[in-house]
Image (cartoon, rainbow, N blue to C red; front, top):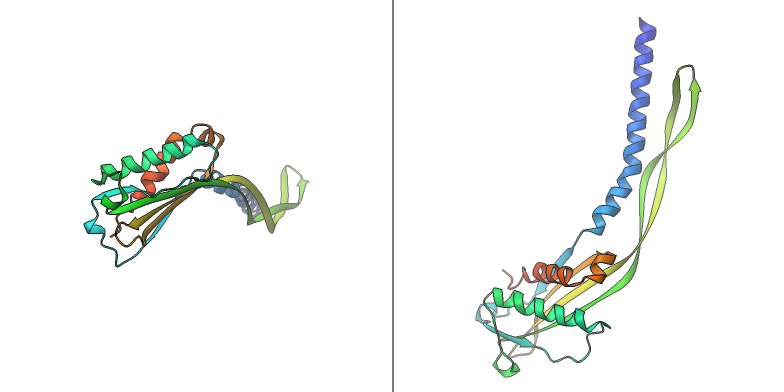
Length: 200
């Protein structure tokens, strides 16, 4: 009877070791997959700016956005204008008539992330009778994750003082689908950033 209890206890311990081993192997994969879909957003603003007095906006004059694809620039402008108008702001063409001016930067860069995580290395494992035996050794694993990160920055300047009063940003790892069909990812990023405008 005691031999059966010992055998059952050993079998349960081996099962727990295998479960821990499988979980540690899957953890970095799950982190990478979840990181691919994450849109990170942030903002900062001037606490003294009169945001409640802003009703009209225009574009800050700019010739070069640093993006080779003019469609990306146009889609971003359209998305920002649409988001601001949905919030009740009215576009005017003259800088002198605007309560605030808007500017943006958009682009991408190559990123390399290193992720270290504990990983059980199985060993030594062997065959003894009808069952496996052994124990896990806990070491450290490292994943190298290369990807292209898309970056959007939106800036608001006071129409009278011309001082910067608000900055919002978003960044996200880009898939091939995002780069080949950019309209929807741009709209999602713009909406997420301008959800923080006006602050408070």
